Picture 1 (cartoon, rainbow over the protein chains, first blue to last red):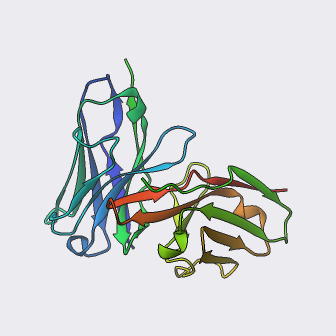
Picture 2 (cartoon, each protein chain N blue to C red):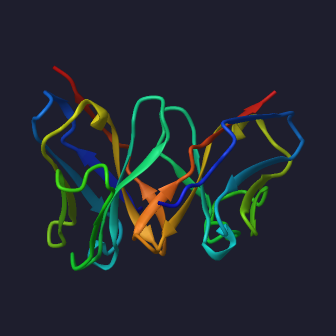
Length: 117
Length: 108
């Protein structure tokens, strides 16, 4: 079964940092591009970042560029999102997902990040 | 940046057909993907590449894309179809992935 499990969310103060992880299983992780998508409470989906299978191609939404860093460890079948200079508007559930073509499947269950003083 | 526009909400009676639209400039030149999200759950793709249905998704879900509008059609709507639905495309000019604002489908 293809599965993605996020971890690392929590409460952090504005300006703080947090590192999210996503553990993959049930598929050849090193063959697929991966992504982070977030959803603020009661709001819609927002794409955050994408990384190619070999980490050669990395993309960020304008809202996080320069503050967030996506990375992966194919040996550990893991995806990461380093989030620095966090703001209140970064409060959201963060989902990792596998990219098939230009669509996302499956998605993890998400991890909640709350930025508040 | 590329913008996708969806109606915030719509209602349909059980057994009827729901058509959820997704508007974008010349969207027919892009591949459109649709996700269903039920409360407290992660999104689930129900249609990809305009009209392809993943295995395990009911044939009641179908998609089309023409001109400036893509449409997700749900036939013979059931109570279990009540959810938020999002369209999504890749903006190749910026290498960004874009979601519509989402449509909440209520089954009366």
